[in-house]
Length: 227
Image (cartoon, rainbow, N blue to C red; front, side):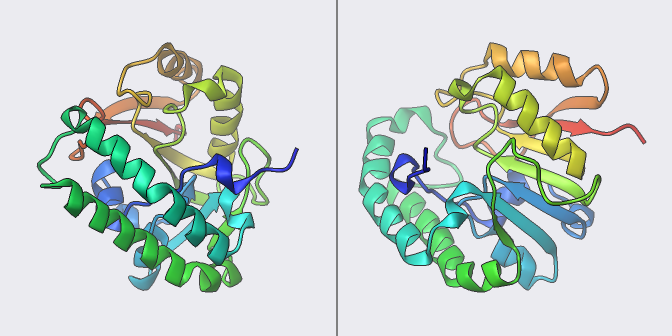
């Protein structure tokens, strides 16, 4: 069955948020990075402009700039209304208001859209659907990042997560997943089972980050190959 763009809610974050969510040091930012489920984030553009190396993977990259832009416009009002109704579930320190949040998100997504066609030509935005095999050799990337995708969408199921993370670890020496709670910022059995599975063969850590917007989602999962 063909994937439809109206099934997703594209919502992008910027490089500063990535830096805080994943505790990215200057050394980390100099590595060869893969972003899984990056969507319309502008992390790729901003790091590329700094001379970094990052390849973003997402199922929405099969669509045109115009189609993605249209979908962003369609969901913007709905997303912000949901934020308004659930405002008490968020920490309003980094963002002082809903207007500031919306402005930051739309700015990030505009930067992504401005870079999208160029980035696709350069191979920085790659259409891919996990857990399908990636067209790269083992350990091609130093670091893999997953923002607000894996572990958050528990409905994808245990088998999907094991297969997806396994493929990420095939091409990446280390991966970081943020956050490690579900859409309601609740701890889940899925996360515990994933940690137990990969803890048998990899170094696995839960690391507190400097980023907390939704209350309780201030930790990331780090899975690293033994060296």
